[in-house]
Length: 125
Image (cartoon, rainbow, N blue to C red):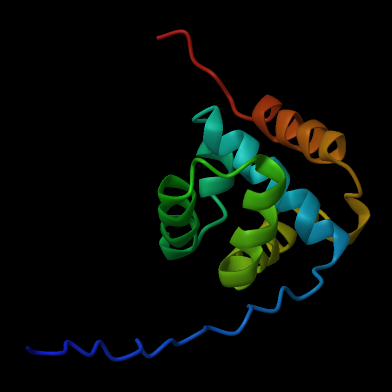
C-alpha cells in the first residue's frame, strides 16, 4: 500500500494597508466628486484637470469599485488618488481663487459648482 502525504500549503499573509488620515477638505471634495461622477456631471471639474490624467485615474478607480458604499469609496479612493484630487484642487485654486480648506461641507462644494455653472454663457442658437 501506498501512503499519500500532502504537504502543508505555504501561506502568505499580506499586511493590512495603512489608511492615512486625509484633511477634511480633501475628504469633502472627494465625496462631492464621487457624487458628481455618479450623476455624470463632471464637465465643470474637467476644466481644471490640466492634461486630463488625474480624472482618468480617479474615474477608472471609481468604475472598478462601484460596489463600495460611498463612505468606503471615499476612504479607499483617497489611499491611491489623493494626489490626483489635490492636483485638480490646485488648478481650481489658480483658476477661480477657491480655497479648498474653506470648503468644509458637501453643500459648500455644491454651491461653488452651481456658481461656476451660472458663469457659463449660454446661447440661443
